[in-house]
Image 1 (cartoon, rainbow, N blue to C red):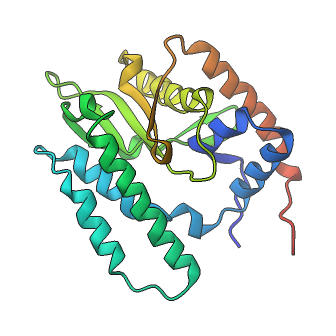
Image 2: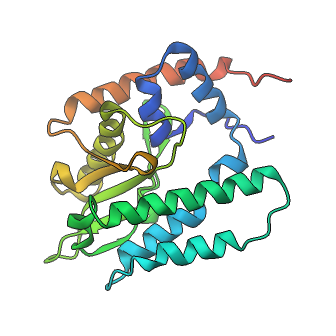
Length: 230
C-alpha cells in the first residue's frame, strides 16, 4: 500500500476540500495520504485525447470518437474494467459536446501540453499537484498565457467556488513562475461531466488566502490520518 508521508493533494481535491463538510474533508485527506493507483489512472485515455486535440495545429474533433471506438473494443475481464471503459466513453462524449460549444474560443488559440515544471507547488508545507492538461499560448509571442484544467468526477459536480479555487491557484502559479499577467478567462477549470467551464476569479487574492489556510489545516491534520482496515 502506497503512503504519502508528507502532505500532498491534487488541486482538484483541494478545491473540493476547502468547501466540504468536516467528515468529507477527512475522507479526502485519507484518500490523498493512502492513494489508490486505480483511481489516479482512471481517465488517462481521455486526458491524452484532450491534449492531442488541443495541441494539434488543425483541430480534429473526431479524435474523441476514435478513442471511444478503441475503448469500446478493448477486452475487459471484470466489472471494474467495464465501468472504467464506460466512464471514459461518457467523458469523451462530454468533451465532444464542449469542443463544439463552450470550448470554441480556446480552440482558436495555439496550445501545448502542460509542461513538467507546472506539475506541483508547495504552499505552507503541502505539495499541491497542479498538472493542467493544456497550456494556452499567446498567438503573437507563443508564450504561455493561461491553462485548462480537466476535472473528472461523476459523483460530485464542482461548485463555482471549487472551480475558481482550482483555476485561481493555477493562474497564481503561472503568473509567479513565468512573470506574466493572465487574463482570468484564460485560466479555466473544465468540469467534464457537467459540461461546465469555471474561470479563475477576477480578484484572486481571496482564493489564495483560502488555499493557504486550507494548507495550514492539512499540514496539522496529516500525521494523525490513519487508513481504516476493513
